[in-house]
Image (tube, rainbow, N blue to C red; front, side, top):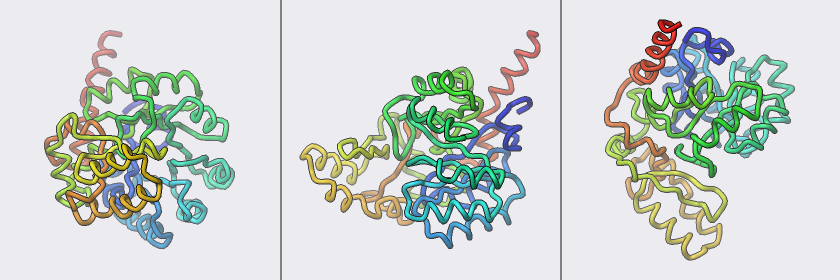
Length: 313
């Protein structure tokens, strides 16, 4: 998009970041999104350090466009991954689960753009003060770990509170959501759930079909009582979590039940015991498409509105 400051900052065609979905957002998906004009992201999560470097180098073979790496700052590997992105000359780092302040000087010295994910105005201000180049304001409609505020409420408040570009995330699944995000003051969007249905997404077919057949009320948030709420698609596992929460179970019981659940969903397609992370817009997704088709459809309305506004002027 012409004259979009986020696109100009990163060097991409469309102001869209692919969400950092642990064990899902790999080199293949990231490269496909980048090749389609967006900013692909490799999610490192608790990934072994050697595998992080391997995934980065695979992505470099698959695309010559900018792509980024997401670092979960609570990961025991965070410090090593923070150095790897410098060594591998990564252009963009997105962060979650903590403050990237301790790495800012190192990243800035390597010309890396730093974009933290936040769920509140207070955290957005802290990240700006720490040196963030932009902020991802993520509402609770998103899949995976969520905060309390909705995207509709969070984004305009963050936009008003900081002076860096704001990217809207959570509940954005089609061009109507894109247009709404821009109206709220965002300069770009981050999308995760829609890309679960991308042809280039390497999740188990059962996971993909669960997203494609989801209805509007098929997601649930588990783990609120533990302080680590996660939005997922309903199944036997989520019902077990709800029973634990009603019974005020100890955190160890939650940890035991959830151990390896995401891998069971992503790799094994275990419909009963897998953690199928997805956002509330899963009910909007009804077909598998390429990343290019997804991005072009999502920005079709925005381009139309730009043309209308230009004609009016």
